[in-house]
Image 1 (cartoon, rainbow over the protein chains, first blue to last red):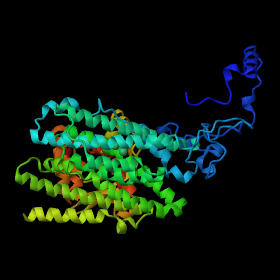
Image 2 (cartoon, chains in turn orange, cyan; image 1 turned 90 degrees about the horizontal axis):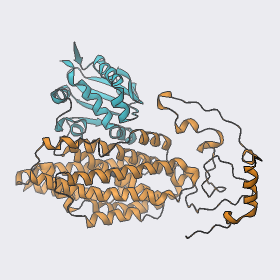
Image 3 (cartoon, each protein chain N blue to C red; image 1 turned 180 degrees about the horizontal axis):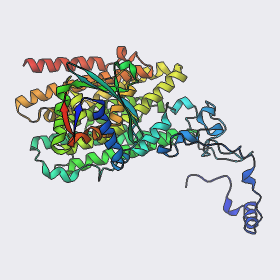
Image 4 (cartoon, protein in one colour; image 1 turned 30 degrees about the horizontal axis):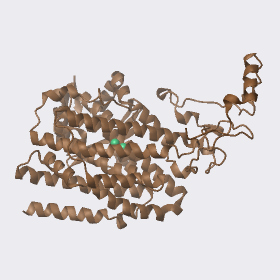
Length: 379
Length: 145
Ligand SMILES: [Fe+2]
Ligand SMILES: [Fe+2]
């Protein structure tokens, strides 16, 4: 036990006397002291049931809460009454300012996440795998891709988990949304693991470069830095990688798997974009810090372009290992990577960081890749 | 009964089928987007399809993309839309090269046109619903324009 509270309730005589009194039927209804006025709740769209946005009213609404939360450092949900002079424990949240965590429309992303959950055991048509014969070289390449993707999903589960308890409980919607991200990412790791093993080949080589890139996400100094690295930069790239993987999937079974994972991934990217935008709109003084962080994060990210992943994508993209197939695979993969970088710049611009396009080390990487593809085509 | 493609009637029939197959679309989850379907050719057409909750609630033909707030538009020549729907007809699902994602990902055969990256990302957020929506055309008798 590492926390011994300031009061031992089991030996507190006042407390025990009070409990005995209550059991005799002497209620004092103290929990109704200072109760707020009742509120009127309206279900805006009955087809959606009761939405989080429907209960955003009066003192319960985040819009009406102060930008910096000072009075509540425990677990009291936003709008609960804190007893006067009470000894609420301080859980030490370090993210107490709305712009530290908030994203526009986060309540909507929560509802969407809850409504669009799926099951990796039953929503992928595993039973159809027997219908298709996958050439051995493609199966091995696909399992190498699944290995890298499983590693990526681990960090995407760990980053939100790492920061959740640092968030003030006033920001319940953000804590809830990143909890859905944890379950989404756990499901992604599950589905890639299952697919790697389903035909017997299993997992192949873990990535040293890739894991260094992923460590950079986990080690970010602030939640916003971790979020911009994971949600906007990393998951933006992974979203395009999922689209590419759907495109080069050997059978409709893998295509279905990628259609489902890309939906979750795009939702995570959208939250990240809205958090970055909220931060830039409300706390513009952090812009140099975020830009300095991204200068390094973008360097880190190039670790995800590791040779094992690149080769496996080329084999899948070209549908084989003959020189002709490999040539075709190089072309296909080159087109994906240019797209990844451009889509990231669009998102950064939309969030209020158009300067990424000028200062990003990714541009040089892209030029090197284009030159490499041209050289391969000439050869 | 044959139904003409492209036409408002065609997409309204898909919307009607979506409502009739509520169980499948409720399982896929909330879908909230207004997307454009652009059919290029001698007589180009642009349609706005509005999805809300579990349904396609509005289908309109537009004379200009500015007539609706479109999150993104899928633009392709009539011949490609035809190949896609004919592929879906074979088994109820498209062949691998004819999923909406595959058609729009590489090359310029089907373009995803957008202004706002958040609108663009809705294509991916609701991919399974949008794919299931077009797959419902598998048993339609289509008259090609
Ligand atoms: Fe993921
Ligand atoms: Fe994700």
